[in-house]
Every structure is written in structure tokens, then in C-alpha cells.
Amino acid sequence: MKKVVHKKLVRDKIPEIIVANGATLKMRVLNDQEFASAVDDKILEEARELVDAEIREDVLKELADLKEIALAKANLFQITDQEIETERVKRGGARGTFMQKIFLEEVEEK
Image (tube, rainbow, N blue to C red):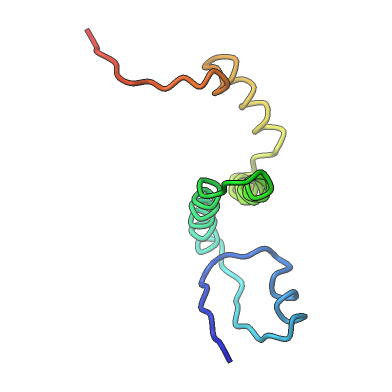
């Protein structure tokens, strides 16, 4: 029998999927401080996976995963999805978006 150590935050239904596939698992529910740290780790994991994605289907899946964990982070601070969208639009209006593909090389300050 193969044992794989994960030690990471997973989606809520993953334990039941594992059991349904005939495997056994060891898990626990995190306290609030542990959860906050695990969310940050998961954000970095999902961001790395998004960077590595090379086909549209994988990019879509990783964007969905990243958004889900970002919403978990928002929930820690009681920030709603609507507040995020409002801030995104506000920042886009004030600072622009990334649609023009501008890459800043350098700035020489006076």
C-alpha cells in the first residue's frame, strides 16, 4: 500500500472522495490561526500551478482554484465578493488594468 503525505489545506469534499475511492486518510480540522496560515500556503500553491498551466483547460481550473482560495482569505477578513469586485473596478479606473501588456523596464527619479 502506498502512503502519500500531503500536509495541506484541501477542499471540503476531498476526504469523502478519498474514502469513496477506497483509501484511508488522516486529517484534522484546523484552528483559526492554523487555517489562516494554511490559506496563505494554498494561495502560493495555486498561484504556482496557475503559472505552470499551459493549456486553456488547465488555466481555467487553476484560476477557479485560485479564486476559491482567495475567497477563503477574504472570508477571514469578512470581505465579500462584491467588495472585491468594487475594489477591482476602482483600482482599474485609477491605475488601469493589465490589458495593454505594459512592462516597466526602469524609472529614473529626479
